[in-house]
Picture (cartoon, rainbow over the protein chains, first blue to last red):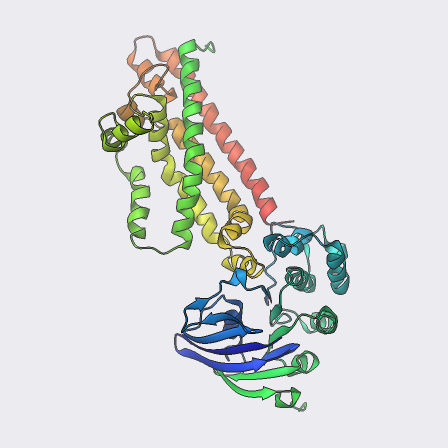
Amino acid sequence: MMLRVDVSKRLGEFAIEASFASEGPVTGLFGASGAGKSSLINMIAGLLRPDRGTIAIDGETLDDTAAGVHVPTYRRRIGYVFQDARLFPHLDVRRNLDYGRRMNGLADDPAQRARVTDLLDIASLLDRRPGRLSGGERQRVALGRALLARPRLLLLDEPLGSLDEGRKHEILPYLVRLRDEAGIPMVYVCHDPDEMRQLATQIVMLKRGCVTAFGGAEVLPTAIPPA
Amino acid sequence: MFDISPTEWTAIQLSLRVATVATLVATPLGIGVAWLLARRDFWGKSVVDALIYLPLVLPPVVTGYLLLLTFGRRGLVGAWLADHLGIVFAFRWTGAALACGVMSFPLLVRPIRLSIEAVDRRLEQAAGTLGAAPWRVFLTITLPLALPGVLAGMVLGFAKAIGEFGATITFVSNIPGETQTISSAIYSLIQTPDGDAAALRMVVVSILIATAALVASEWFARRANARVHGN
């Protein structure tokens, strides 16, 4: 997978001016809150339109403002796991998981479904409504839902952000398994250097809307020793 | 006392038919308008908004007269519809349904609009990232989540349509068997010597229908809410 991003976008007082190319498998977008990480992945997802620039995956152009190209979100085949899960409250877990397959007109694939529900340990939750799930369970179902839509790229926007420390350690291993077993390239947004070290293979450092460094784990700030 | 005459039965059935048809035809239109007002910005939006609410604040007799001018036999739209599609509103029960539909439209649209506005747009975005085109997002996410409001709007609209009087009698008059609804029947009975007992019967009937509509709406709303909030 090759993801190329070269965009600028003004949002009120804040401006994003970012350019990078990454091969994955896990590209980490790292930076403090307000650095423009979420805006950047919203542009990759097509939820936000850049003012100028291009976004392309494997040579396929998704955005090119000069040529007037903007592929709408639903045609991008880019999965998105939001910080707040965003499960559909009126559908049970089974139908939440099945949603992307139905919307993309993909054939029913019980083997694939079983693989994903096993990988994420959510097989026992299938008949429940999202209202009856814990935060960690919700996030795992959201992961499964995104995976089962068979995306060519998976965006994760601080998927552990709304969870407490204990829950984070509950989900992190699933993300590592996902990286090593599912074979879907990911863009992972977070502001926790430890999380980044465990997951990301390439890191894009963002500061006030600009890319300040690009590379491996060495670009991450070293942990501050406990006082 | 409870010996309802054939004329009265006819008026009751006609009222139910008029209100049902008015509600069923107005609902899809109301959903569309509510969605536009809730989710889209367009030129002239405030004008559309005002137009929809106009029947609520205009004297019903004015709305009825405007309908007569527009949809009457010689009205601009009425003449065209009669000549080209064979649809006649003037002095027909269909005209009563049109009058009731127009009068109840603001009451129908408002709860639907509010409930669509209350649907979390982030869920709609999530559906988009899963490959759902905008119209499928609407059908599979927005509409099901707004269902309590849609049902509330339908019941309110239906209740208003059942009770509509001023615009209906102005537009399609008060013809027994064709345009005489419960309201206009009560009006006629009150004008008739010895009509009191019959008028009272019709009053009881309309109270029963209104109460049943309210109970039904409560029941629907509770069921729909439970469905939406998923426990």
